[in-house]
Length: 199
Image (tube, rainbow, N blue to C red; front, side):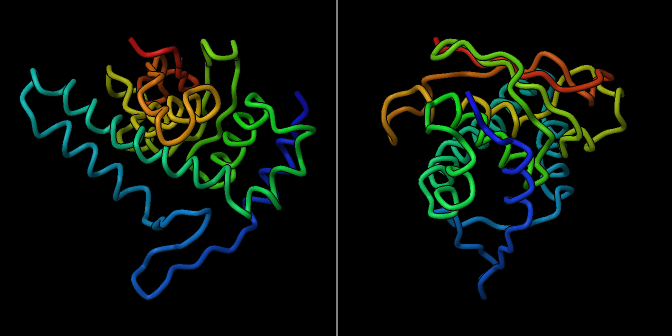
């Protein structure tokens, strides 16, 4: 595997994306928006903390599902876009599933969603992602909650694995699942996300 992660992050972080008159950004084959991280953190916090204790886990799964769906479709748009072909593809020796995964997490990092990297990868079976400085850790005072709360990284990690190893798009969603095993929000030094086959 040869991916120039540093150069991908540098290149992609300099892209200028601008919204149209509706506030949407048509880029990477999808429509995206640019809202402060606090909007998403407050929404997730409100949703999880507004339900009874027996509904906390289902509420969290709804947030993971939203990120999973978004990561799958947006991720596909990214890795098939002209921007990817021009700015990322030349920085890998070949477009293997493993290189595409490393490139996707470099883009994820470049856009400020979290400083993420793949720590372990067993092709088609398992991936361990480590994340630092991710915006979801800012929802609470770090170390003040018992449950991990990085729903977006959790969902997107599973989605990226699906794009690399699942059935051809759009039939691969739900092939993999992700569990968060560590979190800055819980007092750990980093977030850890373990992706395995669903079921």
